[in-house]
Image (cartoon, rainbow, N blue to C red):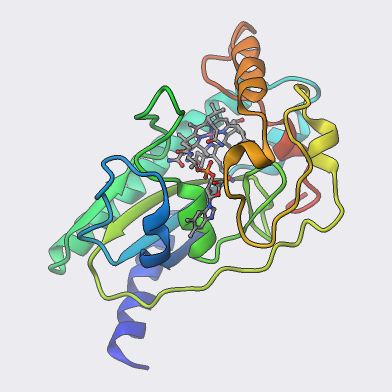
Length: 233
Ligand code: B12
């Protein structure tokens, strides 16, 4: 095994040791076309580590036609847990001599266009963690879309993983399950050119805001497209 592969294995092992269920490495070169904040975010970084934490299946079994307070709480805990794993990962890499930047799990920075510093789904897809489903969510073969993601940008010499094939096929489960009728049902071999191609975001957002009127729902959560996915059930 060469030094790059053994260092990559060592870092991935440390990240799973921190409690991550999934970890992969993306080459940042193809990701440079993404909308980012700031636009030169990737300039110093040749690799992006994608980290996934699974949410328990039963949390979604309990969701009938609306999000539950339990899902809302698990969502928050997963975000905090991911942020901690990302911070610790960045500090491990920095100690080894490599500049690294943890990107928050759930932080919108452009409120007009609903965009974060960088899309965790795009990074996750390029790191081989899953494909972009019709719901626009990243679908992992083992956990389905029941994963939350975080990204660590780094200049460490890590071996890059490759994307996996889309396995949605003709399935329309998430399309049928969306209470807002926001998922259009379009398929993609790699990724959608725009989010609107896959999802009517205004409808999705309006539904999330309506759910926030329910007791115990303090965040923009829904979970119905996640629950409906046959992967990870
Ligand atoms: C803003 C935001 C929202 C907004 C807008 C949604 C959206 N799709 O952007 C609202 C409030 C509506 C929302 C809703 C939800 N969200 Co949200 N949200 C975000 C946030 C903070 C930023 C998203 C962003 O910047 N998008 C920018 C666009 C450009 O990127 P994109 O959506 O990924 O889509 C493009 C790219 O992925 C691109 N692409 C894919 N692969 C590649 C490869 C290359 C090389 C290139 C160039 C492009 C590319 O193709 C897409 C079309 O252009 C992220 C966290 C983050 N930093 O990513 C969470 C995030 C996307 N949300 C998440 C979730 C789970 C949800 C909800 C299910 C709510 C819930 N918790 O119940 C719904 C589902 C909505 C849906 N079906 O998409 C998860 C998704 C996890 C997963 N398994 O995929 C994320 C990643 C949070 C996390 N830390 O895990 N969300």
